[in-house]
Image 1 (spheres, rainbow over the protein chains, first blue to last red):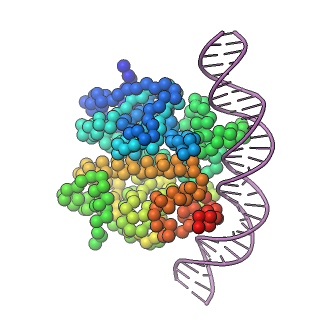
Image 2: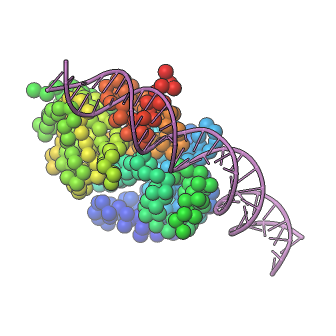
Image 3: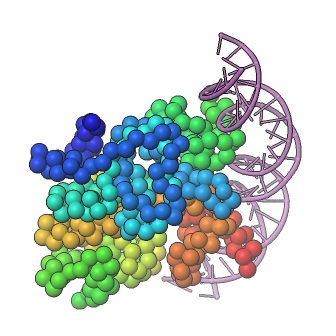
Length: 192
Length: 192
DNA sequence: CGTCTATTTGAATGTACTCAAAAGCGGTGG
DNA sequence: CCACCGCTTTTGAGTACATTCAAATAGACG
């Protein structure tokens, strides 16, 4: 039986839910467990669910024509993950999503979330705020990439995702920073 | 007297509004005209309004420690502009917003939009979808910056903002691409 | 028309990449 | 429990992409 503590705390960051609303949400929330490297979504498929990471870590990435992968986002505990475009329009996804560790998720299917917007209108507000926050996170990330050197971005990564560096492979971080693993290794050497 | 045609068409992309709802929206929509280089929002101030560009073009940018500016977004006709974090939380802004041309805007103040979410719940949906779309636009932009060369990004810029290149200064585009105006000039030379 | 700013051009420099090889580390099976 | 395999990280050398600085040219606007 899953524990709803983290996800309810997450909702509580933006909306106040009464017991009936919480019950309504719990009744449609689904639960899933992923092993390391398991794939949750593949480019071209439709992103049918929006995921809350209860434990573990996901990465959102895509593969370019040459076949190399680029991470756009890490989702450790208490982050939400989806290909937003694919999910909200129910169209083919641009991104892949995979587990970097053994991961436990809650998720809403597209249909159950649309119904939930009707049954619990506060959820519409919650996901609007969530999207806006994601929006501003990305806006700053763009800022960071266009205005800072790889070394500065690496230090920002450490700040945004405390302790994560110890949990995941360096090549994943390099991919997130937009540099090669070789160059990240050199940066790390410089920074003790 | 402003013409509501463009902005109503914009709402209609995501929600169907009846005459009463439209009237309600019109009654709180405000209008503003900006001259070229006029500033709409400055870093540190609170972003009190969310703007719809009816005519002209805005840029969203910030200034780094060394004093140089970095554009994160251009907003020509039919785009929405705000510092989302600042607006949605009513906290100090990270970005500046300024006009690249003579620009005509519609806008909602924070208070009037919060009230509008109550009076016209469809607007909650509209702005959730808007934020999600912005979110996915940025996600792809990050992808583009971390995986493509400056030259490829320049070609993508031309595709995302057709004709805009003719309207604004090259140094603005260079700032958006995260390169120097000098290097953009070299790229343009190569591409005929 | 003159002034101010933007763009172009060129040379030298620095940042980050590729390729290649060696070293380290984690898991699996004997 | 250790040895081996495969993958990740490190190290080094040479290269490509993008920058800085400086000067010349072109454009915009009062």
